[in-house]
Image (cartoon, rainbow, N blue to C red):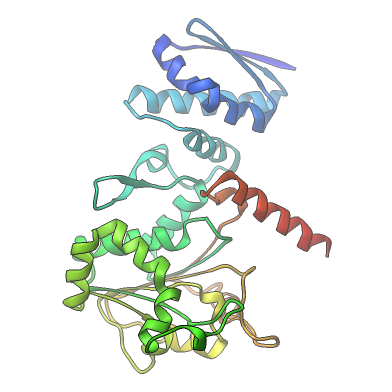
Length: 317
């Protein structure tokens, strides 16, 4: 067993470090099985040598951010811990920096290292695939980056699309014309845009043709230039649909393709265009492939447990 004592200059920093009911420090303590205690401005760590060293580095990184005035939450400590364990190619600044701001002025920040890698991949590549379970922020973060790109005049328009594939239901039972029938499938995209832009601005941008939200079938035969294009629920595309979509990219455009390989609603025997495209394009320069997991789930804690339970079940069967 190794014991390390960390002298912290400011008692207030120690208080902020531990958080309400010690929730911040417990993130580190439970993960690494390290005992962490504070007496005054001195923090004592004890446990396995390697884990104590990781915990000490994580705590010192957190103190550095706190001294800069950052208000840290448990997920920040989770990210800092992952940073020390993985040696991920992101910086401490990227852990706390906002990637966008909502219409109400709320900063949008990545809440896991995987999310930050995903956002960085969008910035650095013309085409980015992101595969992960529900609740990992695949669509939400892509929409946030699309809005930022438009506001920064990097693109002229935002195009969001999904395949209109039923999840055990039938389009025919929904009332209205084709657009009204597919609207429920596009609802997550509408919700994200409303939060980023506000209802009024969103409506004006749709009227001016700056924002287009449409089913995937509407993309056929077009060339999409100077646009930020998001294909959501891409696991429900066929191989032919995926090829059609990817070849729509024109000059000055950026594409993000998101999907969940565990929620494929295609008919039996039909292969997912998303999985096929990832296999084919895995080593193509300018294309990034990001994989998010259960640890990147940022919805209710139960969602992460549900995803883990399903993953374990699938491995056994």
